[in-house]
Length: 137
Image 1 (cartoon, rainbow, N blue to C red):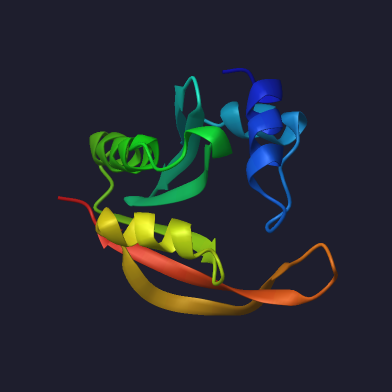
Image 2 (tube, rainbow, N blue to C red):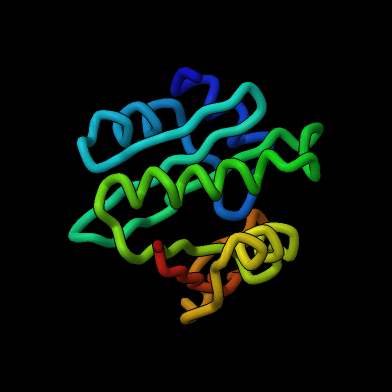
């Protein structure tokens, strides 16, 4: 999946946080700490720094949700992070994104913190981000 394809899918999936541009994806993918898994209908970007993995973003085509692809991608992130010597993983998710929170909990993540008013919604209001963490076996 090209950066432009990632940006198109990201835009179909997100308004909060704002979708990322093709240039942002291209820049991230040049970093030697960033890794990705792409599927025809979804992808993730992650990174490992100092033994800690961060799930930067994950996107699944809305027409292909609830078919196991999200679980496959999160498990792929954890597997690939472990292969890069990460022992812990974390991510941020909008506090009102119940479907994503359920996915992350299903794959071993639990709430470990909160960033108050972290995301700005399209209407200008602010929304908390939950910080979810998981140990990588």
